[in-house]
Amino acid sequence: MLQYNIRGENLEVTDSIKEYVEKKVSKLERYFDTPPSSEVHVNLSVYNDEQTIEVTIPMKNLLLRAEEHNTDLYAAIDLVVDKLERQIRKHKTKVNRKFRQEGAPKHVFAELEREAQQYQTQTIDDEFDVEIVKTKRFDLKPMDSEEAALQMDMLGHNFFVFTNANTDETNIVYKRRDGRYGLIET
Image (cartoon, rainbow, N blue to C red):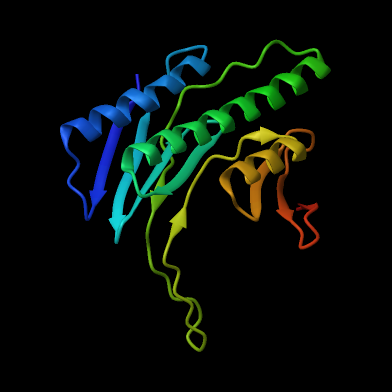
């Protein structure tokens, strides 16, 4: 069962808003073979007349994240859930196609788990100060470069670090300026 962490910025999160978010996001559970048990992070904010909702669902094999802006908060919630649903379907279709091609059994989504984050500030070298304002720690899941590129696209990032399933080495896929993908092997 999903656990909800709903926060409001310049907005009071009423019971009706909370219930609506939980009702809509819980519909995503139908895409999982086993009931997911994780925390769903929901940030609601209002600036001027624009309502913003950001939903993050950390999973063991995938990080689902979507953001929407609308003048109507309930419409924004509906739109963000639609985005998350498309991400899940896209990922599940791609993974199932890959496993069918390799003759492996049907892919089953793993349990959701939290993304560990640690914030710290570090100073490197006396003459050249660099301030590290955020540190992220995560487990590198073995996957091929195609799956890593898919993960990167779904996160909206320009690069993605992963363990190459074929070589067991740490690799990085990145988006090139021409829109194609690059692979850095260590």
